[in-house]
Length: 161
Image (tube, rainbow, N blue to C red):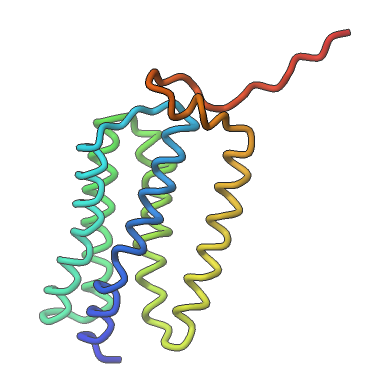
């Protein structure tokens, strides 16, 4: 496997993984009442792209798998520690680190399986859609995007009896 080819394909499709990561983070913030500023999202994106930059340059100097693991660890630590400080350790782990694991690490690792990359990513996209649809099914989108932030998930009507 040509490391340069794999690195260039991963870097070329990086915005797709970032888009999914940011969509999941935005939806999670809306339904959980976490208010992140656009600068927080800017730093999340920068930490996400640190993987691509580091992997692209490391792959010329160390084995491809080692470069991948080092770049992944650095990016995960950057984003995890940032969100740990901004929100909380729990939020830094779930959803942040989990979403980054899926949309950065697994998404990028799919490029190691020539011929299966598209199918792997498509399955991930469909699963993401299913999870987001279920997680937001009871969301009042008018309230979620209202100027004042209130929890966007409707509560179940109370049973009278």
